[in-house]
Amino acid sequence: MKIVFPFFAVIALVLLAFAGVKVANLQFLFGVIIPYVAAATFIIGFVIRVLKWGRSPVPFSIPTTAGQQKSLPWIKQNKLDNPSGTMGVIGRMALEVLFFRSLFRNTKTELHEGPRLAYGSEKFLWLAGLAFHWSFLIIFVRHFRFFMGQVPAAIQMIEGVDSFFQIGAPLLYMTDVVLLAAVSYLIFRRLAMPLIKYISLPADYFPLFLIFGLGASGVIMRYFAKVHIVGVKQLVMGLISFSPVIPEGIGVVFYIHLFLLSILLIYFPMSKLMHMGGVFLSPTRNMPNNSREVRHINPWNYPVHVHTYEEYENDFRDKMKKAGLPVEKE
Amino acid sequence: MYNGGKIIVGLVVFIALFAFPFYYNIGKAMEKPEPKTDTPAILQWEKEHGKKECVESKEFMRSEHMQLLNDWRDSVVRNGDRIYTNAAGKQFTMSLQNTCMNCHSNKKEFCDKCHNYMAVKPYCWGCHIQPKENKS
Image 1 (cartoon, chains in turn cyan, orange):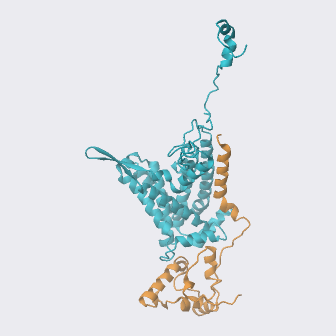
Image 2 (cartoon, rainbow over the protein chains, first blue to last red):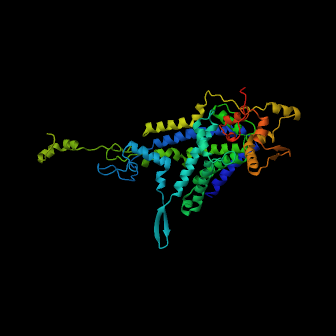
Image 3 (tube, rainbow over the protein chains, first blue to last red):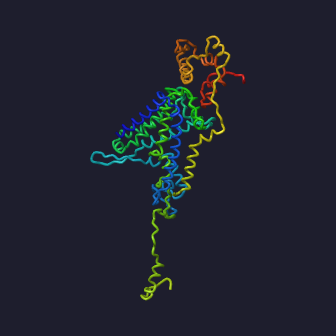
């Protein structure tokens, strides 16, 4: 059920877009209204979610300390794994965001006969995750040829590198293959490993199936059931200049692709996909380990009245003098 | 809000990036590309046959011409087969320069129109000689 429901949900979305365009002729709904709603939901939802996180207090200084902390001058500090200043935090965060450094340290636990417990390195999740995210980023950037009147040389260069092998016509993009392969692995991983399967929820499968559908529909309309691509750009340019047009004869695969993208954008702010913004707000990564230099004030702290020694002395000065105890003030 | 300054700077950067296409194109009107099919050879064909037609239907050519050209290249260069039979059973010589460009002699007004609009750079002219056109 945990797998079947999200799987058929994505199938249903595809069929919905297909029927909506092919049977009911709702091109304007699927080509204009839903994309606008999706873009607005994405951006507003994203901002609300981040602001909500920003209002959550961080009670303690909890950076992960994965190396030697700043200490005496003759002890070498591990500046990236145990940063004590802003530059170190930026370095650690950049490595985390760009190369998933903490996932690289992923380990697996195995119970062998004996019984004997073994720990080992597990790099495939890191590798597939990195391949997936980087291909997705390159594909996203490449799509800007549909969003810009004059396509900048930088984007054309990325496209040129991506289609470097000049396979077929239109040229095969390497990232298309890598993305689908990586997403397939990420799905397969959840299904094949019993421990991972046990903890996987519909919210884990749904984005994977959705992104696979998105990628697959893109691949289909580029290489197989080709669409009227000039019409697609006209539609997109119409959307971003707020004068929407629906050119004739674009092809239904494009509307399926656009609908899956819209669903992804709507789903994004209310799902685990928000790790895109959340990674920057992880206290274990974005705090410097400087708790001995700077006192971290817990925002929850109730203003406790502290009875200082001065006040104590004021209360008992006479009695203290009588007993012959030394006092600070006479 | 805690660390409000940094979070708001982050959000502003995020919105600026996301909204980039919306403000990038302001004031840069981009008209729809209209590839021109009015060369003398095409007009002559229209006079003789009563209509403009390519080797396949317009819709097919619009979405599949790159595939067709790729297949033609493979057929001619690798198999030495220069005869193409279209959906209607009519035969043509597979040749970019002698068949395609015979009618579509206006590369700048035909090929380049959509290719530039979509930022597509076909590598046809890496091997073939680009037609010399009089700048009109």
